[in-house]
Length: 459
Image: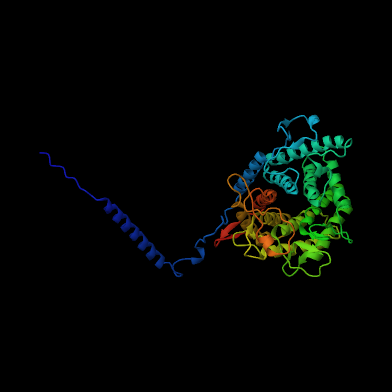
């Protein structure tokens, strides 16, 4: 005998009530669980903090992944080719290049000081990781520039009024045109690039040593925006190239000039109380409102690192340069934020966090640890934190976010506070490459662990 079927009707509201009931049970259970956590039954010091960056998660693999992401993006958006400025036709035969030829436009220029840092960063990334594709990026573009220089030098010898796509290489107008890219060219030679860079290098060095405007005591200076002005940036736009030239030729005059410039700038612009630099100085003024711009301090920090890296131990100025470096390292460390990044104005926490300065500091601290100038046990953790902060600013495309655009010298806070940021601010890319390369080496030289939730270099 078949029993009659029974259909049970359950209203939709029943499931809503059931879900709410289960959520209530879970919530009250969590409350009870929280209620029983106390100092007598739980090691509270081991509770995981809620960090805003991937704290303590840095490895060689993820550093290399970020470096490759940046390189792959830059390869796509910085073509090293000539084109006709009217038709856009690619010029493959340099003999056909003339006054109508331009370097094909990408997202960035190939001749700027920012790209000098990129070329150096690619070389450093290649050396650290063993991946020659980084080195090839620099070699390809510098070879292209060398070929252009050779071609247009011949043409201009017959027509000095001819405009060329590399006028700023042939006739630098400022230290920005010369120092950074010159230093990268010399480093490329040390890394095996044998194409004709010598004439460009000599031209740049001659400009720095003999043509750039100087104060009466020989300090490299500018006449913009005000006459007889020092920009802290110019340390980097000159000294590393001089240091590399000294390292290549063995001639003391280049080291002497590099040390002289650092000490002359520092005498006027280093604040020994804060242990950081002011950005601008104007001859004739007896006091200044001091603005401690992040990236300018970065250029100074990198200058000291680059100089110490090649300055002979026996040089009479080395002890003084090291003194300034150690003081600046201490000062910068004191201004790092809890995200690992530094502020646009270092001592103004209400200014925004800025990427390029942070990346430069990361590079400087990591390089100094790797060279033995700073104790890895106490400077290693802040360096790892700094890279963690930088890593959050490289997007999936390989663009560097949070970088302040080009910035002149100013004497009011609004100027610095409201400088725009852009992924097309070229200043961020080279520092990220340099920072990643040195952090990669740091991780090879020293291991760290999380001890009581803190990054500790215990070895």
